[in-house]
Image (cartoon, rainbow, N blue to C red; front, top):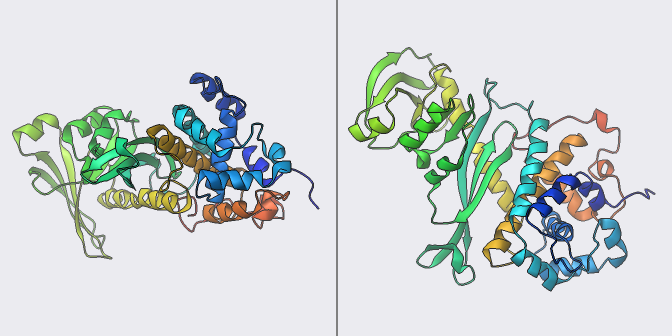
Length: 389
């Protein structure tokens, strides 16, 4: 029988402890911690994410049922529902936001060689948001509509790596387009956005930064054709034109030329019109880039189904943001684990296996069905690009 570390400890070994302590020190997280440190809080909340716990009482009951294993799991403080609730309410959520960004910095290079599905070497990002509905009487700070509360999770997703590079949690009233002001455009990168982000002044700032964007136009946007270009037959592309904005207000906001690509989806018969500031790529590639935006929808769907970000353990803004950021950190941690151990199982399968074996002393490779040499495992499944969801 394997007599090594518990599975939970094996997972947490992949955390950069030094980076975590720097994040804690940055915001004074362990000041007057009373024996329950930020690390204990992170372990509790990560345990809840990995095992799909329903409440703080559920977390407490599960962990206190194995007191002889808590030390070996990494816990040093006493596990109590009230203590964890206080930590979620009072400890700065930015500790876990910064730490999640540290994990993202580790994970992104691991997935750099994964296929994008488009013949393009540049980095491609998708920007979108998802709304998480809340009860207004419980979360009054997240007022959204007359009888409704909500928070928005704004995300910039690296489509090649399927790793979020920018996340902001706001109340539900914040308009998506405002997030364009907070993103530092990367020269040479492509930003794929839907029509909610069609703001020509903000998009021109991306253009001046040397970045490219791909979006869809809206009804009522006036565009005047300058040139028409030849289009390849039987690709779904019906026109490829150089255009300028046709009204004085919009032309002041975006004085340069744009490229308009009309495309008919051969599967659904939908007619789509794309706008971009890139004039070099084939028109079909522009359409394919916009189609790749569906991966961010998969990301939102996946984390809502498999992580605890729809039901919250606390009602304050700090507790909600803490839980969301630790959920993101858990997602990225499993992505790191998958690459480091060359696991052939999908991310969902890894989570399911871990949820049943966290208290066992089983090698992760064996628990995930890769008991043979992990060097023989497939590097990455091609079932879906979003980390094999």
